[in-house]
Amino acid sequence: MGAVIELSTHGDARIARAREAAARVCDPEVPVLTIDDLGVLRDVRRDGETIEVVITPTYSGCPAMDMIALEVDLALEKAGFVHRKVTLSLSPAWTTDWMSEAGKAKLKAYGIAPPQGRAKGRGALFGVEEIPCPHCGSLDPRRVSEFGSTACKALWRCESCREPFDYFKCI
Amino acid sequence: MEAPLFTYTLRLADNALVLGHRLSEWCGHGPMLEEDLALANMALDCIGQARNFYTYAGEMEGKGRSEDDLAYLRDCADFTNILLVERPRGDFAFTILRQFLYSAFMHPFFEQLSASKDERLAAIAAKAEKEMAYHLRHSAEWVIRLGDGTEGSAARLSEALADLWPFTGEMFEVDAAERALIEAGVAVDPASIRPLWLETVDRVFADALITRPKDVWMQSGGRRGEHSEHLGHLLADLQFMQRAYPGSVW
Image (cartoon, rainbow over all chains, first blue to last red; front, side, top):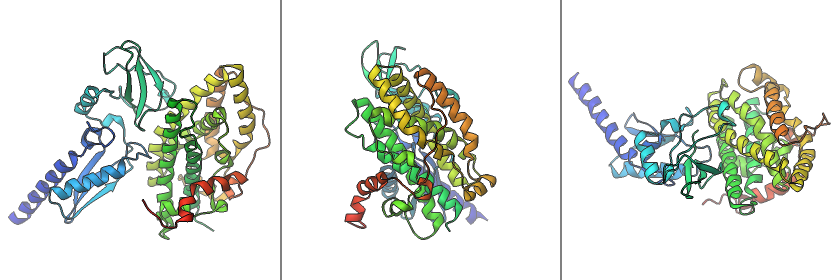
């Protein structure tokens, strides 16, 4: 009985250690955010001797996914995990609602406006968004384009301080 | 005869890939930098959706075909995309109006498909639905801007509408195999999308000061592999590397 408990505790510790390693991996396109901040890291679990890390893409065509999978694999190897695999999961679909508050604060400090409010459905289709400028805090920015430098961002410009900035789209 | 679910998934993949490729042709040629980025972003979303559908189709087929095999190693007659998406990109008004007509259909379509009894299709659709919402909003704004813009932009938009309208009927076609999937709760009945699509089209057209054309004879054939000459040229470009250097990888 004691041995079994010991084994499972040992397993939990391994998972925690693997999680810690995977959670430090950063998004190559928004390097101030870890995949944990983004909510891209979905699960770390054990499959027999193998440690499995589950990640989910932000957008269907997100080109950063292969890079993230590779970096998670490297992080696990560095932490000493021989038997490991990285799995891609599509469901449930990623949403900006999963982004941590710490992550949003880091984004803002980096000059990217974090997603505003909660992701919505059809009702928001033709709605108007109000995004505070990440530089001067003014509520007077104007959307330049729905699409920005990466799939997850839109291009805005502040009418007060005249600075352009990226807005992390709310989906 | 191929399995209905395979055919269904392949059609979704082919539509997304061919439209994604048409959008990608604008890369470096957009009318301004912001639009260049927007078109490339939309291309990326469509190609990402295509990858998800192709991967699933290949797995379900069980013959070891990967997403790349399905995209790069099939010829025109094997492609099942609707004719609308293979039309040459035309001018910006043409591209943006096509994107609008397509997204106004695909957004509610993916919304419904995300409740499919097939878990994998549902998962792919739930992601795609969020992306199509952006495509719809962006293209709708441009349709309004062009229609209610200058004389020149309005004329180009009207011309694009006359060209594109006869290709919209194919989105609503259903064959026997698909009917069975609809009844099984796996596929979406396009007839249920029609009122939503018309509502969106009419609402945006009203602001764009253009009128929805009267019912006309609709072009058909792409879903059965009967394509226009344009698809061959598109595939020659899209598939060149794998045809010239089979099996090459990055």
